[in-house]
Image (cartoon, rainbow, N blue to C red; front, side, top):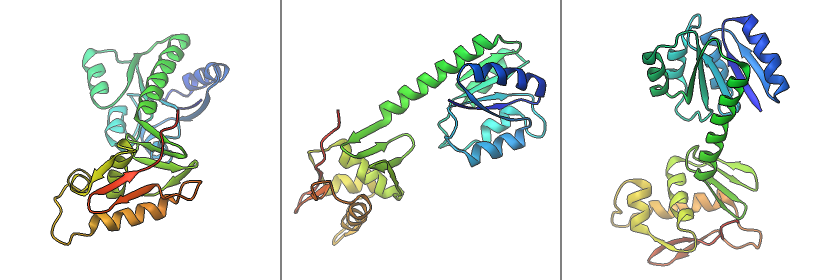
Amino acid sequence: MKLLLVDDDEDLCELLNEYLMLEGFTVSMVHNGKSALATIKANLNHFDAIILDVMLPEINGFDVLKAIPANNHTPILMLTARGEDTDTVLGLELGADDYVSKPVSPRVLVARLRAIIRRGAVEQDRATLKLLDLQLNETTREVYVAEKRISLTGAEFNLLSLLTRNAGHVVRRETLAAEGLGTALQACDRRIETHMAHIRRKLGRLENNVERIKTIRGVGYQYVGIKST
């Protein structure tokens, strides 16, 4: 498991690094808030967990939390010498998954890390829909076909999400427009057809050369893939 350790106490980082390596973690270390934020943004969702100290030079841990992009789904454990309840509440409200006060036993730290990683994995699995070779994640808004990431626009993702959540059933054009595009259909409106053409082109056909998305003329569209077990 890949871990980002952010703390300005370099001696403590080295001690924790030795213990965490023995527990199966690969640890990257940075020692100030500015470097932490740059590392997180450059490696979004790359790490399995982040340990983030509050009292950091340049940018403190709370401000780092505020600046982390909303599409980051890596669990974060706050580590600090300050154990006040107000700090704990603030850290959790800003998006931290857990909060540990120094000094902390390395065994306890590892246990808390594994707990937030497990919770994150369960939530990620619940958010992922699998339809044969297609995987769609509602949380990260990512789509993969045969393990290759497919780049969709926001509207295309919304429409595909509606179809896959109703796989095997017809979704009416009016529903696709209202829920997928956020607006009602107008006379001679071809937006749905245009988006569907783009989605089909990007996803490609199923292995048996069948179109993934079937047009039900005059009604709507149907995703024909079968859910994986």
